[in-house]
Image 1 (tube, rainbow, N blue to C red):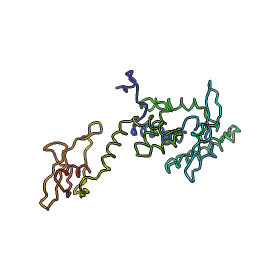
Image 2 (tube, helix red, strand yellow):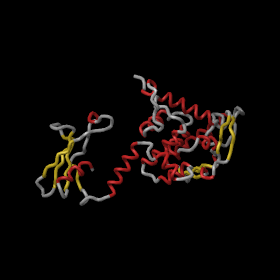
Image 3 (cartoon, helix red, strand yellow):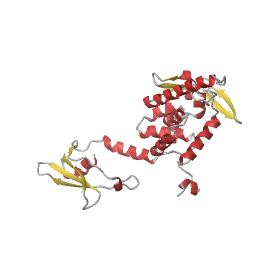
Image 4 (cartoon, rainbow, N blue to C red):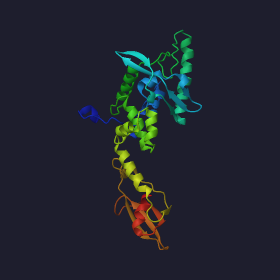
Length: 288
């Protein structure tokens, strides 16, 4: 069956889910510019910023890159210019992304040695280049990304949507919106908030759960696991599983034994023993 976005006129989401992002990164794992797609996904820079990024503005020892140059395209001609003051920034790089960039630059040096033998290497000084070292064209980057998405079979998104994806992932990870604002080079926190606060339903669910968790209720729940809960994949429907928890007094003071199962009369996945101030809180212990 063809994917829904190929058979309907519906407009796809502007942002991939974390699972779709992971699927794309797996698909492009062997691509020569894997480090570029990794940077777009996890750091969210603008296309022109990455096309212009010089090696001198990347420090893989201290794990940071500085955005201080920008390429813009007009009628397919590329022009270098200074970015707006709020867009000039230093972005921290994760240890994983640092390793990805290290591999990329090592491969680039290897390619340089091979091309110089043919007197064809172009020294652009850029981190991300064509195979012969020439600077990348912003339109070429966008077209290459579009083609990779088509080949992956994932919902179609624009290259600029990876910027939205990066912000959404950061907010889902409970990072402060001001930190996300600075990384993206937004002029104000309000722009970041207005753009991304409702971009994924998961953000609202995360906010609701974290708000409730702030307030302690009664005493702290303590429990020990008698048997690890191994829940079969068949229990889930669209990543959601409905479980039944039955609590009974274990015969040891205020201790309760909680059994968890998928359906009434079904086999229990495991059992939790907990001590709670009231039996009504047994469900909280099971959820924990």
